[in-house]
Image (cartoon, rainbow over all chains, first blue to last red; front, side, top):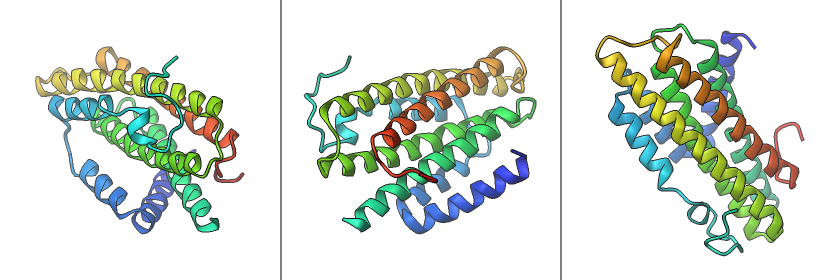
Length: 69
Length: 143
């Protein structure tokens, strides 16, 4: 896929995101507002990802909390 | 019920399209001076969109459409994606630090190469996660 096609696809999807999920749009705006990400930006993203668990993201789960394999 | 199903489909569609498109952009711009920024945007966007996919999965599970075995498989895939993303963030932090001291690799060697590889691995794990959800019946684009 060419870059132009990719960018067109991204533009279309972001437009859809804005329409479907305002919170997603806000998150994307924050992400794309950083012209030069710093190590602190990467660390913040790392901390955010590391703090997530399946149980937090899927509160309807029927799995026990410690069911990692 | 139909509206909820459509919502799940839209969330997963966003996850697939956004992350695939942005990760592809990150991978095809290895020599660009903004490789760090593109990788960061791809990573953070992937994070947001996986969160959306997991919301869709949560709705699916709440509807009683997932078995315990399927849930376990998705949980395992999510954790593999999570580990891969942590590696991306570590590589990204190193690349950003190098860029700050005018030692940025521009994505062609050293930390930059490690960042590209990490992004590629995370993309694979994310694709596996989304494909797994799709295989269990969550509506995907084109399915």
